Length: 92
Image 1 (tube, rainbow, N blue to C red):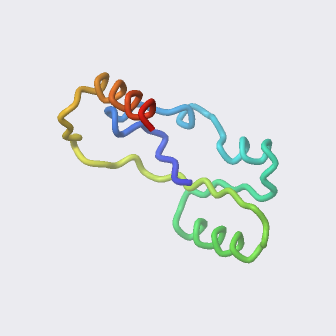
Image 2: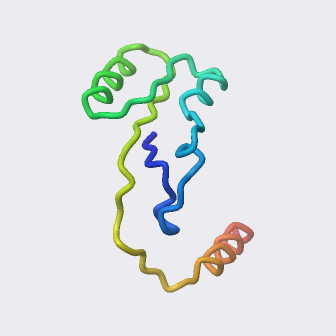
């Protein structure tokens, strides 16, 4: 999983992982036998290759920069977007 420690879609607010929540630790506590946190491309490449060859369930948390578009364009206000999603869930 890629973790930018930010909720970019709503303005870049910090997530729990920015203050210490350890996603790899959570995966390990849930029983995932191989968990890793990587912070650069070389470490990701090595860890990903090892996970592919391990034949075991693995979780790789790749810490990445929080970057995205300057703004998000939508025709719905944030709160209305939430309500529209709830209505959609009820219909399906």
